[in-house]
Length: 377
Image (cartoon, rainbow, N blue to C red; front, side, top):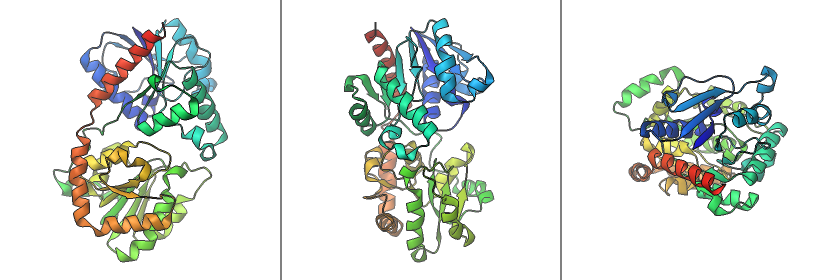
């Protein structure tokens, strides 16, 4: 079988889709699967270990540079010709959409469809590149891969795709996320960030649906009751309509009770989790986030919203309404006040995470691609 894969997410080395593809390619390569796999890149082939295996052919999309400035333009106008020339049997579009004009059967990685369910959270260009092209890519595809039962139900409901054409893979935290052997070493690594001695941690792209603004205001309401605890908010601000996260954090930063970080380097992220008193990630749209599993695997108690309860197996503090400052501050107060509950959730969270493996994800993904390819013949 000749399988083509959109590997452009590896040129942007961070994020859940890149993590998924890195693990899958690494495991397929180690297993030595008997299929010809061609990986397609937009500007250059990145230097990542998972690409070292000889069975992976690597190609950069050709074409005028001005056409390659936009991901969706390169995908829709330049990629189809290359795929046809390579005689690909099936194409795995890992980043939400595939060329609509190509005749090759496709599998689409649609990790959430918030751009369809909550279009007001996106700019016009995002509504087109994600909302329009992803929707019709999924409708035309031979199969769709997603990462939670909730997201699968959304795809089935909004796109009218039958459940047998949807694969749900339950992602795992990378093995590098682990309990610290030497807590002091991790703390020393973080000295350059000038963090509060004890802190609540929030990390990830800041979207409206994740209610980081609510978390900040909720912490302000309880901070006087926990004078030794601060709030650390890390991540690029991608809110739309825009919320001024920096302005909300400014009073905490100026008083030494908060830190605002635009980007956490990969090599420091484990230490950020390990040294946090509590990790918070809420959403009223997402059905999965690897961030929660990463924190749990580092032995850090977590707080999330009702929608994400399943991704932590219920082993954490859950706020009923993540849009409410009152509800969020109440949940924060409970989490910070109960050492016994935090310890219990840490133990249960570590056990919960052991059931997930990238080996299973890689095996299920390949099996689904091959099965849907045969179904298209």
